[in-house]
Length: 343
Figure (cartoon, rainbow, N blue to C red):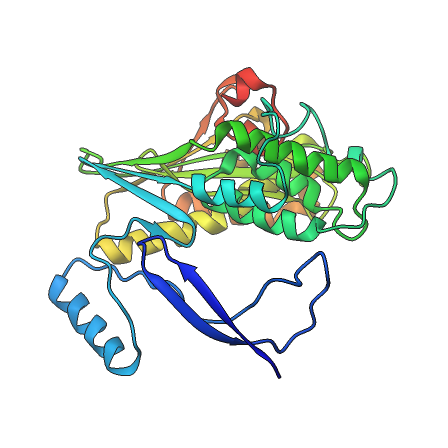
């Protein structure tokens, strides 16, 4: 088995050399010049007690060779910028790396990730595409789940046809790259709250029968912790909803699963009970059905999930609030929006 020296200059300008065994098959034009070495690259340790953190670091150093950075400013492709009572997370360098890898560095920026009102069905027909489709989807999914929720719906839409990608779907992925080209500076901003209470706000929405191919609905939600976005999700529902009310209840049930985890982790780490939870929903029929304790005949087949939603609202003292569709922040996660609403 042959070996190869791999020379790199790290982000902190440290020169590094590694002898790598070439124990895999490589394909010319794809990965012929690349080498791989599985290592533990980055480890982030955080804690409120510096002495305890120091003990953990020393225990690790007794077993492994490792170096310590004074302040973390980059981790897993995410850059950190600190200022007074503020923290910004961005991935400009990661975006530029992806653009360079797929030869889109000099592309013309796009105003939106996809054409407004696009669905996955729009990309299913056409000539079969043979290329690194899955690789680009994976790169964009990571970006959408870390610091760029604005592309999550578009990436989710195109990830549904990975088995048989088409040329039009590949064009859609490249449009997302063109959108990222013009918005690579965007960051998530986390600000320190002055309130004594912990505020968790959840925006939930569903697009009923959104997929014109199988008529399944799309669920989307975003959870804010003291006005800072911490969890967001876009999923196609597993069953066909027979009404918009049913689609909204299914979306709420899914969102509540993440909400419970965040609530319990917050309570355990911070040791507080003053957690105020508000859930914002734009379907008045769904709100009425949930808050009405009487059974709804037309939703008998939804009995378990409906009771689950009601139970969670009572157990965690959740305030279910109506919000107009125009003010529903979660619209970003269930449809391709035009540029004015996207901004």
